[in-house]
Image 1 (cartoon, rainbow over the protein chains, first blue to last red):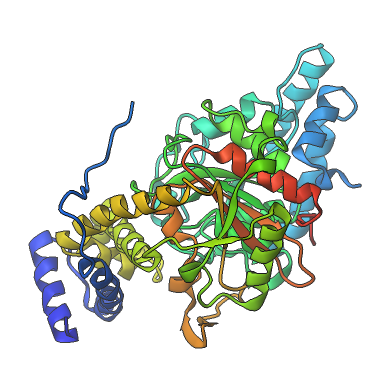
Image 2 (cartoon, each protein chain N blue to C red):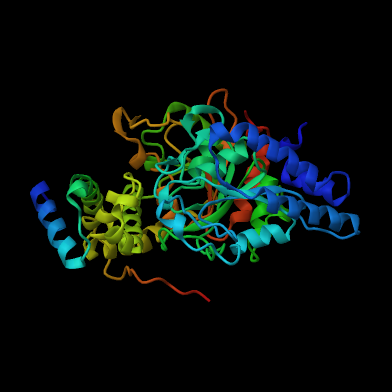
Length: 60
Length: 449
């Protein structure tokens, strides 16, 4: 995702989820989000078997 | 030897035998705190009146022929995210200074008290445990007793530095991505991050439900095992120290866990491997992605936890914490779902390694303690941001809840921590390996300063 795309996503998600970003925090939040996007790409790009579940296991 | 240099085992043994009073031990530690803490900045609250009452009870119990417990007269302190009656549970924040003080101590404080230990106070940390440096915007930085221009690590920096400097004998902290192992390593003491779920998190302020762990700090393997045994009911580590480790199959983690580490940190791992007879190297596959997944889940769960205050009081957060929490809370659901799926896959890869090896070794940090305020460090020839990267080797391990003892390898310069990683539920084996290394004079955790 490009920087403008990330900024657009953040603006939309902020509105949708009701978590406003004050103007004085905008730049720092965008920087932090860019770092998260780079990390997220490492996970998104990794193929996992369909059987791999996110659900926790309960072992007696 | 001064009283503040004694181990928990030595203090409890002598106090229970009536050869040393808990009040004397306490007085020595209070003097030590008053002398050193104005510089080190470990304590955010001191509970000396309470401690005097607890020490008096221990002494009275011994005088009456009773047994105050296995930690009789041992001074301890806790990261300020543990509930202490009468004190707001700060979790390193400004926001929680107005929180109602808890009506009861956390179960951990209760258990240590019931074992005869004496509570000295609450300790500095990164705000809401979201950091590795304990350069707290509200309470100031905690300084490393080995060099006060350097960080003690975080987020349990006050816990580690107070034990290293002899301000207390035991301390408790929490570890979500490395917050026990990293400060233990940088200050040259022992830290235990137990298996996920083994020690209750009740009575502590949370950060990331998926990864939060509670554990102890100490200056010897026996003290660490004793504190761990008091904190939980399922295991018995103290009685088997020195027995189980001899036959352990030990391997060094390569690839991610060596990439970029300084020569002195790699040497520390080799020293531990040699002393434990570990000649194999093994790869925990995709550790880089595990670190990434832990990074995203931490920001998301932390951000969601704090959402009401991120909306109402953003100006009251540490500027180092706020943007990461907001950005984390706004991540797409796909990222978190895939990160949790990856967690299940990665755990299976780690469990396969434990079919052929019992203990895995890795550095606690890529470098020794950096300077306070240092923005970056060199990793594999590249300058990288310090706060985001100093936990590279701890994050993939807490991601899947494996138990780890961080041990202080003897060093002529700054302390070097090595992680001894075991399969889930095998804390006792990692503690036994630490005791074996200690007996071989490979480790050093004497009081400094």
